[in-house]
Image 1 (cartoon, rainbow, N blue to C red):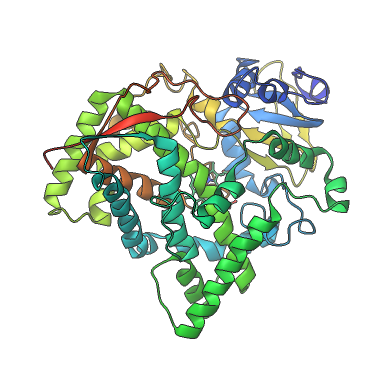
Image 2 (tube, helix red, strand yellow; image 1 turned 90 degrees about the vertical axis):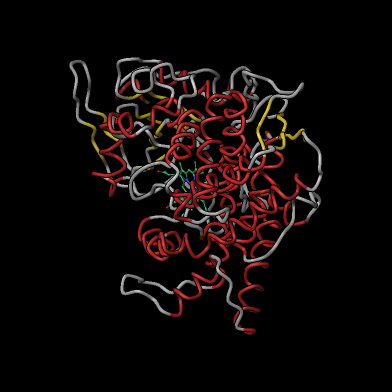
Length: 482
Ligand code: HEM
C-alpha cells in the first residue's frame, strides 16, 4: 500500500503486521512505536500496518499542525472501535462520536472543564487526597512500603467516582469494592483477547456488526450506566445538589447556552461519565505512578519539590487552595516532565474523512494521497523521546520546562494531551488532580527506595499501557517537619 505512495512498509509478521513483536513479547509497545518512528530518520512520516490496515505515522511537527489544527476538517474523527449497534451506550461517548455529533456533545461538555468549574469541584479533589494520606498516616509507622500503581489506581477510582459519578467509594480501604473491580474490568486493556478484539475492529467491522461484538464488557457498561441514571433520578426527586460533573451537566441541560444545539439525555450523560472514567483512569494512575517513580529515583528533584510544597503550605496557612496549587511553578515543571517522559497515551490517531493530499516538501518526496478512511497516527511517545527536541531524552529533567526553556520548545513536539480541537478535554483537570495529590503526599511523606525498588525500571511487555515489570515499589517515609 505505502510503497506505491511514499516509502517502504515494515512487515514484521504476515497478517499481524507491526504489532506482531509487541504481542509476542519480543518488544514493548513503546519500542514498537520508536522502531517505526526511527525507521526512516530523515523522513516526515513513516509507514506501518496494523493487521491488514495501513497507517501513516506522522513525524514532522509542521505536518502534525496541518492535520490536527489547520486542516482539522479532514481529520475530525478517531478510528471507531465500537459500533452503535454493538454497544448502544458506550458508542455515544465523546471519545467515539464522529463529525457533527462529536461537535455538538463536545461543545456541551466543554462547560464541565472551565476554570470556574475546576474551582467548584476542587473540594472533592482535596477530600480524596486527604483520605489518601490519612490511609497511610493511620498506620502510624515510620515507613510504609507501597506498590504505587496499585494505590494510585485506588485513589483515581475514588476521586473519579466522587467527581464524575457523584457517589462516594472507598477503594483505598476496601480494594474488593464492586465499583472498583468493575472499573478495573472496564479499563484493563492488557489481556491478549482484549487487544485482539480491538485490533479486529480495524479489519473486520462488518463481522463485528453482524455478531454485535464490542471490545468493551457490556455488563460492566450497563452497571455503570445504571448508577448514573439512578443517581440523576434521585437528585431530581430529592433536589440534591453536589459540586460534581453530573450536577454541572444537569444545570447545563436546564439552562442551555446559545451554542448548545442538542439536549443531552440521561443515557448520554451516563455515556460521557463512563468515558471520563475510562479515559482518565489508566492515564492518570500511570502519570501518578511514573511521577512517584521519578521522584523516588531523583532525590534532588524531590528535595526541591518538597521545599516548594512547604513554602506553599506555609503561605496558605495549611489550607491548600486552587489558586495556591496553580501557582506552584516547580510542581508544574515536574508534572510536565513526567508527562514528557511517560505520556499516558503513547499514540493517538486521526481518520481521514475527506480525500487529502500531503504535498512534497523535500527533494525525493512524492505526494501522499490519503483517501477517505485512511488512518494517521501521531507517535506522542517517540516525539517526546526524540533527542532533536529533548536532548538526552532518557534523563528526567524538569528544567526542560522552566520559563526560558519552555519558550524554546519546538511547537507540536509536546503532546501528552494530544492537540487541536480533538485534544484531551480534561487536561486541566488531570494536571490539577496530579498536583494536588503530590502536594498532599509530599507535605506528609518522602518517597524513598526500599529493597523491592527497581531503578531503572523495566517496562512490562505484552501491554498496551506502560507499566513497570514487577511493579513500582517504594516507601512512604513519614516526614517529621511539616
Ligand atoms: C494525565 C492524564 C491524561 C492524559 C495524558 C490524557 C491524554 C489524552 C489524549 C492524548 C487524548 C487524545 C487527544 C488527541 O487525539 O489529540 C485524550 C482525549 C480525551 N481525554 Fe484525556 N488524558 C488524561 C486525563 C483525562 C481525564 C482525567 C479525563 C476525564 C475526566 C479525560 C478525558 C478525555 C476525553 C473525554 C477525551 C476525548 C476527547 C475528544 O475526543 O473530544 N482525559 N486524552
